[in-house]
Structure formats: structure tokens, C-alpha cells
Amino acid sequence: MTHKLSGDNLTLIRGERCLFQDLSFALESGTLLILEGRNGCGKTSLIRAIAGMLSLEEGTVYWDGVPVEKVRQTFHGSLVWLAHRTGLKGDLTLVENLGFERSLRAHSDRDPEEVYERLGISRLKKLVLRSLSAGQQRRVALARMLLSDVPLWFMDEPFTNLDREGRVLVMELVEEHCSKGGMCVMAAHQDVEIKVPTTRVKIQ
Amino acid sequence: MNQTSLSEGPREIPGIFFGLGATTKRDLLLAWKRPGDVLNPLFFFAMVCTLFPLAVGPSAEQLEFSGPGVLWVAALLATLLSLNSLFISDFEDGSLDQLLVSPQPLPMLVLGKTLAHWLTSGLPLVLVSPILAITYRMPLSVVGVMMLTLGLGTISLSLLGSIGAALTVGLHRGTALLSLLILPLAMPIMILGANAVSLAATNDIYSTGIWALGAYAIASLSLAPYATAAALRISNE
Image 1 (cartoon, rainbow over the protein chains, first blue to last red):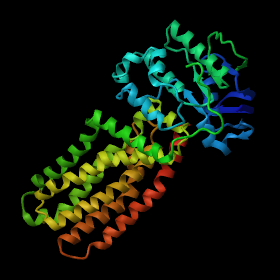
Image 2 (tube, each protein chain N blue to C red; image 1 turned 135 degrees about the horizontal axis):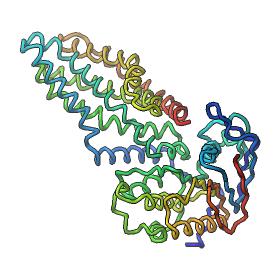
Image 3 (tube, one colour; image 1 turned 30 degrees about the horizontal axis):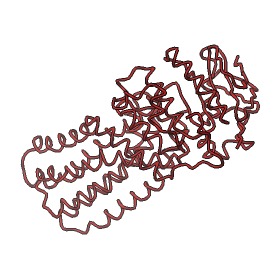
Image 4 (cartoon, rainbow over the protein chains, first blue to last red; image 1 turned 180 degrees about the vertical axis):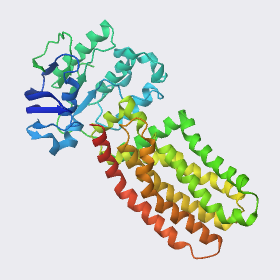
């Protein structure tokens, strides 16, 4: 089943500043969209706007050709978001955190143990998140993506805090996800080498 | 693991009661791991209720007369104290964003959080109140009425308070504003509750107050989660 995400003439004004104007993009299953731009140019705001958390001044975001406001639940059920703040509870352990996520959205039939092993977090299972390093917490947030069965991945600066192997791993995971018919929107200010059809949107 | 492919067709999202249950469970677990947040308002409630008789003197008549009022004022203030933290930590660590983009209906998730809040703030107050009522020479039959009014009243307070907490979540130190927003809605609850207990103490008909509190609780239960969800979306923009 292929999906399509597109934005039509998006304009976002925050306070006095116009972050972007008449921005359009289209994304299909199996492809990657990279949002580029300086710090503070509005990459995160664009992702938040696409996800429906910021109201756009003008323009519409479409999911499978339907405006997302009309299919909010289906749309939210099709996405998982790796945000700048991980959204995991520092007082809970890895398993408790991911167990909570599991009851929110559709989960994949992957074996959690395998996922933990792959991300290198299997020996951190019993520790509370607060005691993990920033990079390890990012890996737990990646586990949330791998354990959900959704086509659309939002990744906001996915390489932050990760070591070199971690960065390579993220690229591999995105490649795998796209090759299986998923799609990914990624905000990045570094060079990204991912071998999937890529569209780049530059925010001025 | 490379072989697992994305599922075809519409994906199965866990039912809405899973979302509600999971949020309640998570918040109860968090409260268990951080008992300070639960104990502070309870401690405040107990302090006010035990200090008051020491200040006004041990006259039995006076204590019986002021007991219901003091217990209710203390319960209201203790609940207001605990409300401030309802969404703050979720807002700061980004889990609020994750709740907002989840396919679960936000009012249900909010209801789950409010339920956990009541179980860790309202219910402990109700359970502790009989011990404090002894200080005010409250007869056993009246203690039952007081627990019932406190129970119904704190349910409404948690639900109405969640609207205020959601509106002020983006402001730093919004405690004063939260209290100002909530007090006009909370005042009738306190008046009805304290009045019903006073009437029960003088062997008068008190059931009107109980019914009114029950109606208030049902109204807040059916309306507050939607208002809170809308408020969260606005303040998280």
C-alpha cells in the first residue's frame, strides 16, 4: 500500500517573522525528504506544522490526497516522530517507557530484544532513563520508531548526540525503512548519505 | 529482521481504553517513583487541619462549628497546589508532543492523566480526612458524609483543574494564574461540600448538597477532558 504526503504553498508566520512562504513538497512511499537550512530557520516548525501541531498561515498538508485536518487520527496513526526532546520519562526504565508507547499506536511484530540488540541498548533495559547518556536516550527514542508499525517517520536532527556508528546506524535504518515502502521526513544540517530517492527542500 | 515489511492496509491502533489505561498506569508509576509530589499536598492538608484548632483554642463548640469549613478550605488549597505539576513535566521532556501526535483521542489520554491525578491527590485526602475530623469532634455519621462530599468534590476539582493546568502549561510559574482561573469554578464545590457537612452535623437534610456535587462531578467528567485537550493544543503551539 503506497502513501503520499504533500504540502501545498505552505506559509508559516511566528510572531513577527515569516519562517517560510509558499513552500511545497511531495513525498511518496519509499522516498526521503530532507529539510535543509541554517539553525533557527524553521525546520522544526515545519515538521511540527506538517504534524498538525502548529497552525499554518496559508497552505494545506495532504495525506493520501486528503487534507490532514480531516483525517487527523489516520494521519497520526501513520506517523512516529523522533523529536529534539525525546519524550521519554526520565524516572521510568527503557522497558516501561516503550511499553507505554506500545499502547498508543500500532506496533510492529519485530522482536523487541532484537531491536534493543541492534541499537546497542539491550544491557540498559533495567536502568532508569535519567541515568543514560544523551546518545543512549536517543537510541531508545529510535527503538520507539522501530517498534511501531507506521509508514511515515519524522526525524528532527536524528544525528544529534550520536557517535559515528550511531549515525551510520540511523542512515541504515532509514534506508531499510524506505526500501520496505516507508517514507521519512528528516531535518538535518549535515551531509546525509542515504541511498534512497531523495528530495531536498531548502528553507531560506 | 530486514524481512519484516510494513503491514498492508489499515493498521490496527490499540483501542481508546488502552490509551486511557496506559496513561493512568504510567502516571501512577511515576507518582510511585516520586512520592514527594504526592505527599506534599497531603502534608499541607494535614498541617492546616491540625494547626487550626491550636490557633483558635480548644473550645468544643467552636471546633464543631468550624470543622467542615476548615477541612474543605484545606482540601481545596491542597488540590490547587498539586494541580500545577499535572502537565509541566510532560511539557518539559517532550512527552506532551508525543501525546499530541498519537492516534489516540487526546481527551481520553487527558482523562487518563486526570484519573491518575485524582488517585494520587484527591483520594489520599479523602482517606486521611477521618483522622483529621477527630480533631474537630465530628461524629461518625458526619464523617461519612464528609468523605462522600470530599470524594465527589475532589473529582470535580481534578477535572476542572486540568483545564487550568493545560492553559498555563506553557507559562513559567503559572501557579497564581492557575489558581485565579480555577477558583471561580471551584468555589461552588467548596461551598456545597462544606455546607452539606455542616447540615449533616446539625441533623438537617443534607442530600441536596450531595446531589448537586454529584451533578457537578458528572458535568465536569463529560466536558472537562475536551476543554483540556483543546487547551493543550493551544498552549503547545
